[in-house]
Length: 144
Length: 146
Image 1 (cartoon, helix red, strand yellow):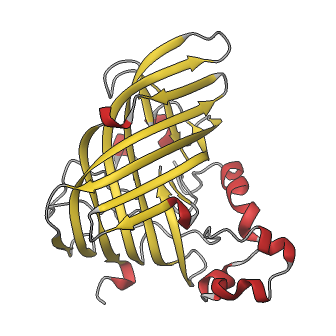
Image 2 (cartoon, rainbow over the protein chains, first blue to last red):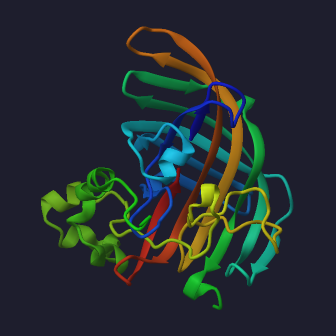
């Protein structure tokens, strides 16, 4: 979750993420299953988390290099809503298959870091670039 | 440069230690539904539906700044498409969601009270379902990509 003093991509000053696991697991952390509600038939999903532990790496390159960071936290509620019909996708190059729906996401979020707090504008002001929800299999389950 | 040791140990330590004493077997075997019958009181208090074993990363990915990461951003599309792999974890069978959104908000310097407007980009997502963990065993869990 990135903050910029200029337009997106210009003047990044905060980069909140949980870090990269030694295994290479990328910016992924376990959360309570109660945080997630999914209704694929209805084409919706909601992920809501409060006071989630993160690191503030301040910019992308520093995050990828695991440079200095500050302890931080984020809270957010984000909602996916499908905007297209479901489609079956099988990608044999990257080894995943599933049924997906292109979606739009709205998010309202906040962050806390040393001497800093951020509050996003209301969810209705979110600009959706690209979002997807679905059900998939990969790895050893790809061929099931 | 050796990039095999990324990830702040202290972050993962504080994230996992609160729950890791439960061990993976209880969640992996589906024993969760009967946990109350055999877990000691201290364990029951911490039994809150959070995975205790981390999954493994997808094998592929991209190289921003020439650094390999096991992740595909939602855009730009990478052939064959029409979507990029939305999951961060491999050996996975379940629900997935990912997004890239942008917007704006207000930051506050809590030392001075000064407020500043910022733009944001958020690439977030979720994975929830069956996965093979770092221990090589099958588990069920829910994960946020942040």
